[in-house]
Image (cartoon, rainbow, N blue to C red; front, side):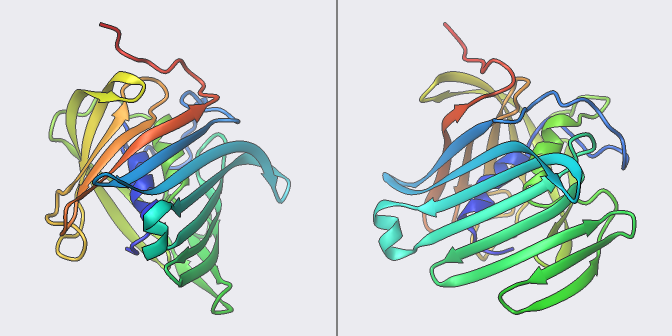
Length: 265
């Protein structure tokens, strides 16, 4: 996986009280609505490293009504002098099933650039990858019920398993990113109350299994917290890297579908 700062931030969105349902299963939208917007602040020690925002709106694609999510991340302050990042992500996904139709990734990370559009054909189980930088178009096989980086966030917020996860229980999700399929595995650690700029918030705590040695110290170096309410908002993540640790916190939000629950003593 690439070293995108925004990718680390959106890992937060993978962590909800959810598992993948059978392909094609639908459910009413319960956790989000058009107009939702939120911002995350990533910091390294006392220094702000970057901000990331994610917004959602109604749209159409080839005449099909759907949701259109837009993500943007950038480094700020001193971090921008050392490593300039400007990342744009977009996903068009079905409003009922959550299945992605189109994914866009246009990034500039310290001079490393990528501009890719992916069109999903779930019936044929193919992803058409248009690499605009390299001027190539290729088809790749995809797994059933596969998600892109952004659609996954909303899919897991809205589809729930029939039973609750037990502490230390793990689940997998099929992802397609860049030109490959991979399985992302997460472990549920229970409920924890954390202090934030908004007050004390009850959160579900998760730990993804990541590749160790290249960026992270160990396979379980990432910890993530998601609000334990109907919004399922990412609240915080902490990543222990080879030198120190990185944290991201929810900074701002608006137009949530449900009340944001803060614990009052």
